[in-house]
Amino acid sequence: MHIMRTTIDIPEELVLEAMKLTHLKTKTDVIKEGLMTLIRKEKLKNLKSFKGSINIDINLDVLRKR
Image 1 (cartoon, rainbow, N blue to C red):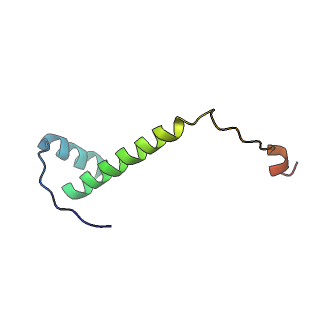
Image 2 (tube, rainbow, N blue to C red):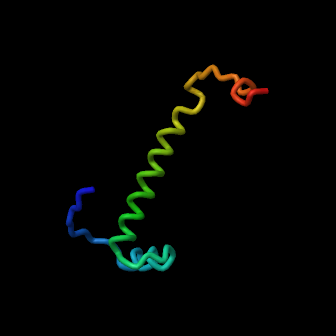
């Protein structure tokens, strides 16, 4: 992973509350966790858009060897 240094303005109360709730020790860790959570959430949202639109012919009884 490539590291990028940047300066951003974030409400201090927001960062401190996130650190308290997550028990993460550094602001960097809180920001990284927040970004990873946001990315995971968006990927799941994108996956959910496929619900019901993919037709897979699977026989569960055969897969379960019944």
